[in-house]
Image (cartoon, rainbow, N blue to C red):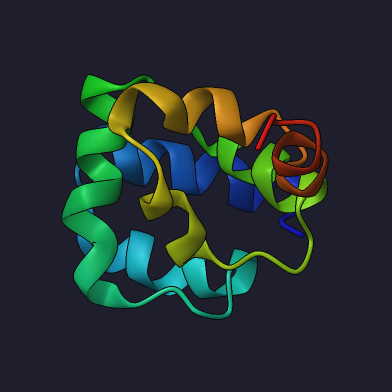
Length: 95
């Protein structure tokens, strides 16, 4: 997980679209993060209000899930899924 300083640094990088900093920090949070995702992550931050706190929450709620798991959902659902345990969510859905 990221410390408070690194979390703030990553949020600032997202806010100012600093892809180099994003691509340096994100692999610390998600092992499957690829630099090609940086623009999508910036868009999520700007257009969908997905902040670093949401990404950390997603990782805490879904430890085995990789960053790529966020792309399973529509943009409207990403923020909701960041605060949801996916295993429980899918287990409780009607068939």
